Length: 179
Image 1 (cartoon, rainbow, N blue to C red):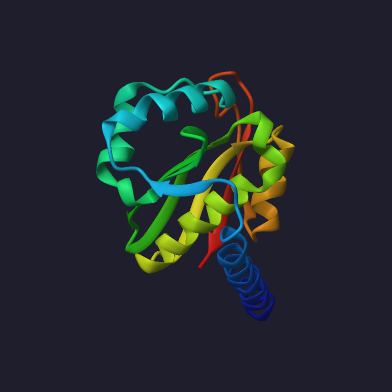
Image 2 (cartoon, one colour):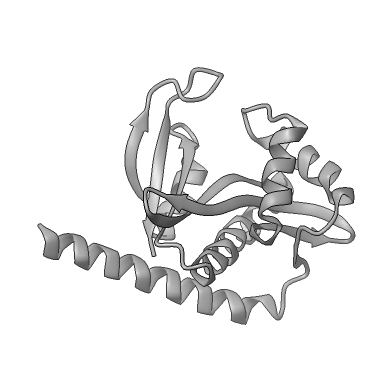
């Protein structure tokens, strides 16, 4: 059993490493750029994009909690001075290990086939690795097939089903990636 888990983790590591290398090569030709959150002036862009796409309503205090505590783990995809994608994350100690947590990911519907979500997640994973995180976790609606596909393609595994996790009554999956 332990050998099988070790093999699975090794496979996940290889998948993430290959994806990160490809990301670096692809970014040279992208029509958009990735930036790190750095000012409160970006907050309306972030809120607008997330409110369109995510089912949970977040207060401005939730955004500020993440953005002010972990600005280095919030990345925006910008094109023509417009935010077209955002990821908000954190990294902290959880039960004695450093753990990354992806709180929110949203990409403007017109840009979804451009792999912006994947690139935002990979950028975040790389930064979490730099911070010596041992794993990354997140929750997503079990009905969100696109998000589940994105994360599973990056090596995330379903860890747990969370019944009626969201305010709309939908169940969630907790996904986990060992680093």
